[in-house]
Image (cartoon, rainbow, N blue to C red; front, top):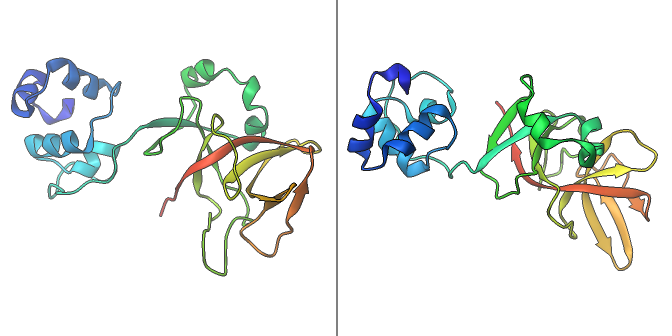
Length: 204
């Protein structure tokens, strides 16, 4: 917004909001709601998508509709780090300069993290739910795992976490892939559920 040549006080006046809110938007401390993003794009005469995410160019038609409000951002970590998530200091991770964060619209806790999907075990080739390789998932470790939920789990004999659907059938539990080419794995105390997937982000 600083590059678009309009003072914070003038923006606040046009939008009918406080100067503190505009200041927080400028610094990235607070993400504007969809309604305020639309107002900002009109006031600044710029593309709302560029204003929200930095994608594309500032010039262009002002968009009349935006998606759901951004709720926060999650650090992108490795699958090895996911397996040791309880040992990782979230504050230290957030202050690391090379940490990549993914903005999301998921309703998750402040402990949520992001993972980039490896392999095609969760890619369905027969229809239904699918999480293709390369997708980024937003995972919340503070949500209880229930039947049918997609989870990130750590097997006792593995150094990395795995992504599967949790199936509970009677007293038995399984980790099921969406890709039928991979086997369903029974779990009986030999695995720890690290978190529940709340959102899938795909780049094109």
